[in-house]
Amino acid sequence: MLRVQRAQQISGTVRVPGDKSISHRAVMFGALAEGTTTIEGFLPGADCLSTISCFRRMGIEIEQEGDKVVVHGKGWYGLQEPSQHLDVGNSGTTIRLMAGILATQPFHSVMEGDESIAKRPMRRVIGPLRQMGAKIDGRKDGEFTPLSIRGGNLAAISYQSPVASAQVKSAILLAGLQASGVTSVSEPQLSRDHTERMLEAFGVKLVRDGLTVSVEGGQTLKGRAIQVPGDISSAAFLIAAVMMVPGSSLVIENVGMNPSRTGILDVVKMMGGQIELLNERVVNEEPIADLKVTHSQLNGVEIGGEIIPRLIDEIPVIAAMATQANGRTIIRDAQELKVKETDRIATVVSELSKLGANITPTEDGMIIEGPTPLRGAVIDSLGDHRIGMAMAIAGLAAEGETFVENDEAILVSFPGFPEVLQSICR
Ligand code: S3P
Image 1 (tube, rainbow, N blue to C red):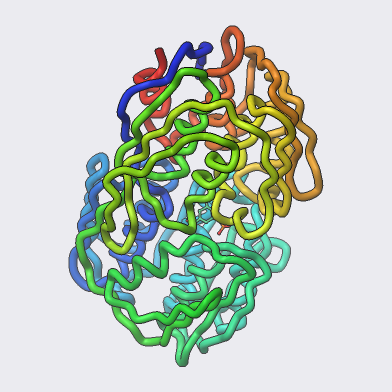
Image 2: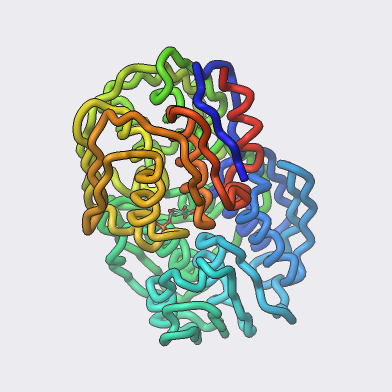
């Protein structure tokens, strides 16, 4: 159980662990590439370790020590038919992107994960992959795990995705790399584009035109060195802590600034917070900066539309932050929250309410009235890393002590979270 006390002030200079989305992709693309891929700044969180273990089960040699990884790629068809099920743990990115990869492989494989994964929708990726010719099945006609896949002989499709999902887009593009013809995916709003950027870094040609990405089949990847920036989704917890504790300021170094991920910075600024970008640079096609974050009293804000995919994973902590802002915060168009690691509309509302927040769920988001004095309570992560961390951050602004049960979920994306908090709280 994680114990959090009210903070008097947040200050210092810190780094956050590597970006989860980029770490997954570096391992996957490295495994499919010809030659060696070295990864620095890898996130050794449970989700990305699940990706490593799946590729090891398909015969790929991967060395990992902390945030350093070496992947000995064997080319696209160097994967071996796994003799055991592939366990994706809690990781939606692993199962959905791997579905696209396994759809190209001329063998049989079965993927399954934990209780949360068993409830998450899979037909959004299975549907288009079946259209391309992959044989995929799962419970409820492929909606739920375990998924069994026999791939190979794919034909290109032009797919209009009903959701702005990088996992859906990536699965189809990966399958498209080995399909005959040109595969294209269009999405209703831009979702994170790490797949596009990293595929280009691995030597793939793709065409991006507004909300549509196209790839031609039959392309190969070349192994390379990848440096993973710090995860802005992890930095978001520390930014929120600064905004919730008066008198605070913090420098967070080496944070990924991909514009498809920076909605949190826009929202904090719209609410009246100060964030300065220092040392801006680009590494492996991904923009990076150091963030200087300074406390200000925030005002409520309305969030909806195209910004939602750019901050979808940050909504739990935005809700926590909004409890301390002046006035009403409305979050809408965020129905995707219902199909994350937990139903995050329900779990954010239930857990923040325990701390005394004035928060109401809606069909596609939530409404928070602030500022409300929070009081320490016993909170449950409910097995969701971002719920556990958002509540711990709220606890920094709560009177007394807050206890987060099932805090081991935090290891999914932010190993060392308690230690980082400890180091910046005065
Ligand atoms: C991710 C995409 C997003 C995000 C998830 C990671 C990725 O999910 O919520 O944490 O790495 O592609 P969706 O594609 O379902 O929106």
